[in-house]
Image (cartoon, rainbow, N blue to C red; front, top):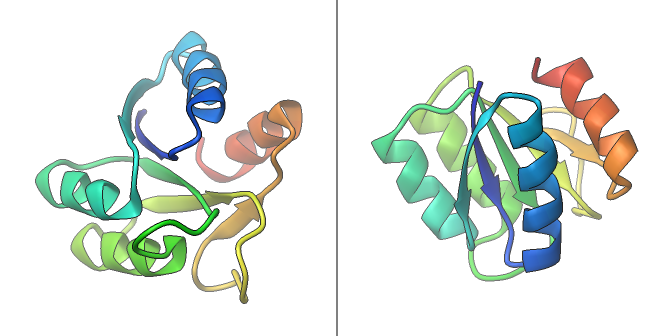
Length: 108
């Protein structure tokens, strides 16, 4: 699956990138939600994983835009995003093993 991983946390990106690549996924990265939106406009991804830590464009707004330009794309939040996620994506825990389980339940 082709994935987009969006986070400004370099340690998180390296950890998740390695896990996802080892599982055979094609992973692209974006440092900020606005960059993730631009990549989602230019390319099709099966899943977009967004760090919910606030920086620039909110993760929720980015997810809404991505869904509008690429219907059917799964969006997962990492961290402690605020607000109801029932219609805006699913919040996933930071624990790497729990992330892996959540990712497989939702995106694969």
